[in-house]
Picture (cartoon, rainbow, N blue to C red):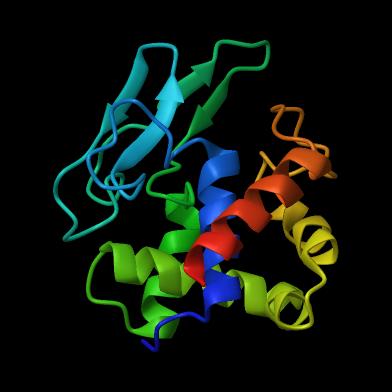
Length: 164
């Protein structure tokens, strides 16, 4: 995989910031090792050979409900197992390494048209376009809370300026 441009890298960092993975107090790898937090608290994984839920691990109870919310979200971009499996095959990814997680996030963003928006400097448009991909981004109806557009634009600028 080709390394992402500085603006695309800053956007990936913004997603990780919004998802809370890169700023998790328990991460040992910039959020690439974070499993969705559930009622039992946060956790991480250390084996990148496969998605942590690909092998029989039960989904995490995020919220008891009603209705209860279970999740298989893992990694820096909180990729659900049901999305990981087809992208792994489509992109011929060998593992769940940081490079593979980046590849999936970038592919999802390409499919939504966000990569082109980022290249054009329309970060607000890219965030809005990706809001259905990540529950922490403003503009979706997942009801899981998240960051404001203003906060994310500010974070993006911080990340982008540190790349130069």
